[in-house]
Image (cartoon, rainbow, N blue to C red; front, top):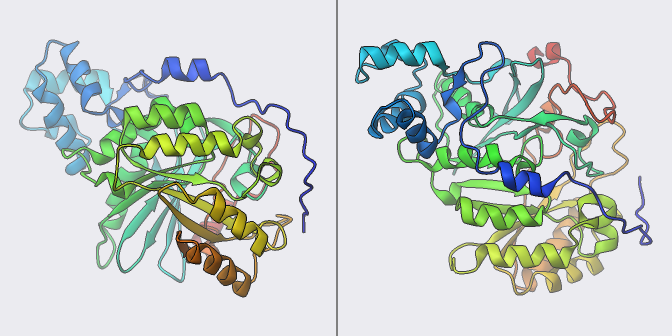
Length: 399
């Protein structure tokens, strides 16, 4: 088991050029398809489609028509879009395409959880997970190929990082999953989508925001803003940008009640320490009386699970509209951590509940197929040279 030292160097943690991220955050048109050199319309939100059609001398209502054909009816063949003119259909077929990541393999857990390995055009693959529950049906989607943040307890971080997903690849996971779920017996429908899969969503802001807008768009997926959740390790400037760009639920991977411990578990904390992060969370919910931030807290045996930690966490969150999700640690090879024993988790939750915090212990789902929180690995052509080769071979999905 890895023990965490309190004496951690607080050197700045580099996360890329934030000025650059802000500058590209307004980009609406998805990049051309890798193989065909055509624009993938799957990733354009309503404003993006309206701009696309306006540039071609078409009226704005064409955007509404295409949204319904693609996202509600699942149609990818422009020739079948009967309320578009023949000339427009021909032009779309020449310049554009509608293509989602394809499930190249599937694993099904004993508890009904489905995990798909989604093939991307460049040879990478990401994982997408469907979690059925009596009250809801949640899809967990990825936003990057791998992850650059290197959180110590996360299997995804072991894979290194390759690139951001396009908006089409992000929302395309939902498009493909819905098609697969409709084939089940009985068919299943999605009620919730969470960006808690591979990657840090706010490091891919320019592509994540159009995807979020499509998820809550009435003419596309029509999900409630409360049923779409973005999870972040705490990229503060982009939390503020998200508040202005798209009103969805926010989850923050906290995992520690003090900076010394969080520096070691979540290196991003060295750049945006807890006090700065919590101020951003307060701003995110300000003026939204029914909104609260969900704080995710992975339970690591002997690391962050003591009564002292629980009381410190309660003090930390006492003035924030908050819900706390306690996440039993999900093991993976050579993780270096163990999950806190159930009685320890129960005692931790009791302290938070007594302090007035809404606290739940997340039920572990899909751990027998490595689909639980922190276990997603996909297939990453690592550009960081950090990969330790824990990805599951495609052949394993059929077992």
